[in-house]
Image (cartoon, rainbow, N blue to C red; front, side):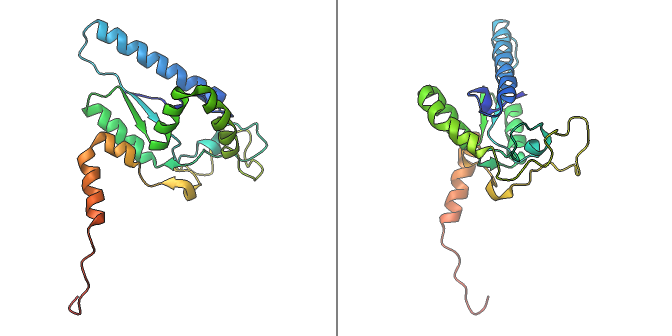
Length: 192
């Protein structure tokens, strides 16, 4: 199980080095999969492709923008990635997307790459910058941060879970959850 990103499928402007590293992970994963299949090895190779995940990555990475960085919304909880990895460890899956937004962007990039570049590029550049000045342009490579948080600081656009990812992993659970929320609430009586 290798963890890449939706940036394995398309480049993210303002994150060229990150995108290049995720393309490399995809290339390695695909080559390894083919080599193992050629040897009839009983090993499944899966690439996890998260969309934006609510981690402190933007605050800890080196920043050359002149603005405080952020992740393009929506961001999903790190727990969704853990569930995807667990799912890949127990089921035969080639690729697992974490976040329906990432899956949609990947499909759009494949279906119409020129249109994707023209529309998504400027939108992602804008969505990657906050209006504030950078708090720590040098990043945290050689210094510790003020905390050891696993989550980022932009909870306003964090999605609690990904219905898409959960549906692809277990459709029955998602359908059951939706149906249970559609049921009318139990009426309140004087005895309650």
